[in-house]
Amino acid sequence: MTAEPSGLPVPPGSGWPEDPATPGTPVAASPAQVRALAAEAAAAGSLAEVAARQSVCRACPRLVEWREQVAAVKRPSTRTERYWGRPVPGWGDEHARVLVLGLAPAAHGGNRTGRIFTGDRSGDVLFASLYRCGLAIARGRGCGQRLIGTRLAAAVRCAPPVNKPSVTERDTCAPWLAAEFALLTPSVRVIVCLGGFAWQAAWPMLSSAGFTPPRPRPRFGHGAEVSLAAPAGGAAGRVVMLGCYHPSQQNTFTGRVTPAMLDEVFGRARRAAGFGGTAPGTSTAPR
Image (tube, rainbow, N blue to C red; front, side, top):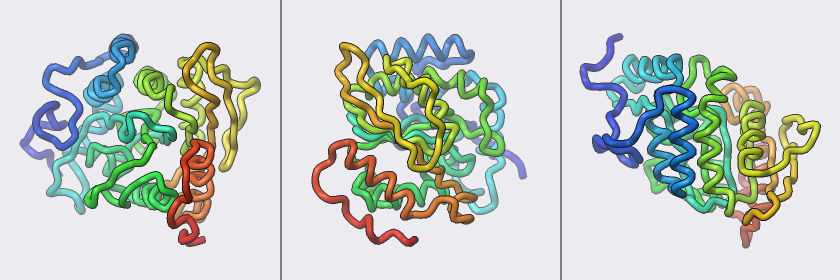
């Protein structure tokens, strides 16, 4: 298989739906530039600008090479589709009460669609649970998909080889997550970490926003819960962090995580975030 002659990845501002960037969006090409550009966007108070700068980052050479290779070669079932092939920014409510933090975009999921947790089986399972728990409208992107008081983000914004970013890549990407969280902090009440990698990435994010993580740090587990007091003088209230097994294809096929298990965590998240009313459909999940 060979690459398409068209330029890859999708050029910023070229008409891709929901592309947050423009041809003039500054591009980070090193960890130092990530830190500087993320801090600048956060200081300006613009979540849209944080997303735009995330979406054109080129600071991790291995990830850049892999995401663009996948976007060029594709796979047989999606060979006729254009791939996004860029970092996938956070998506959802800009005043979210619930932040769902994952590992990284899937090579043929978010790396193809340009939206986190869409286009692959794990995203289908996740959105089905969010829908049942009243945190999303519609299960699929093509039918008015929208999040309700919820935002999705990833610890690493580029699709990594074999779904395994390195610790260095996680740390390089961390300022993007910190900048996004800084602008969400006044509204976020619950953080749901999908998997141990996201759980570990959440601690520096919280520290950067002024929260004091407990010592020793609690271990990740499905259903694990940590309550964190707001920073002194901060506008945010107490934040609850919940652990949840990642709805990867391997985890769902083996039964390590089931729809009912996801619904239990997101039901808890909904309650802890202070949503009123009863979530629709949570009792319908297969067990």
